[in-house]
Image (cartoon, rainbow, N blue to C red; front, side, top):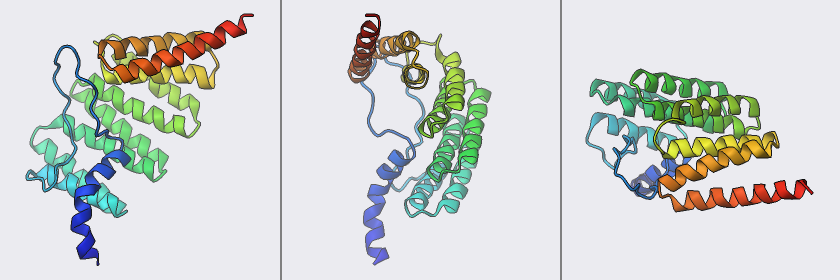
Amino acid sequence: MDSFFKPALKYLLIVVVTLAMGFSVWLLPHERKKKEEPASITTPIDAKDEAGRYLQQASEDFFYHEFDRAIENYGKAINAFEKDNQLEKAAKVYESLGDLYKFRTRIKEAEAQYVLAMQYHHKINNPLGEARAMSHAGDMFMERGEHAPARDWYTKGVALVQDLPPHQIQAVLFESMGRIYWKTEENIPEAILWYTRARDSFSALENQMGYDHMAAVLNKLRGGQNLNTH
């Protein structure tokens, strides 16, 4: 029976694992000015390159809850990417390992993998990648209700991207800072500041969904602020 279902599931598992591991299969709207696309490590079906085969096998391992084998194959993928000098992709695999440990609620090990990703991105002078790994770490703690470490990671990520041209990672970090001030500190003026920055970044990216969401949040915050002044 397994031999019958496994081939059919093979073509579904990449999307499933992609979502579980934190990679989005939906693309943001195109920016007004075309920019270099970040390296993707989403694996094609029946990958021909060595690293892709290891990632594909790791995805299958994850799908079948063979986590130790998935970790082993992610490590092999990192080595293969390094050998081919695809260092940004290697760094992103560390983020995937962090997501895997997060999925298993092995929080210290997840954070350690995110830190490795940050260090690797820093080594290759990729502040956006470094900030993204910080955002993942912050999200992990935020989801657990551990707001202090979440804020620390978000703050470090913001420091890396706040002066860069508009980018999705920047907008998401600004939004995360707004959520920290709103939901955990009830500091509405500071939350409005960060949500406004997020809205402006989404606007510059022509991301209508992100812009509309930030605008709705700002309307809610400003309405509540006005009520509190009376």
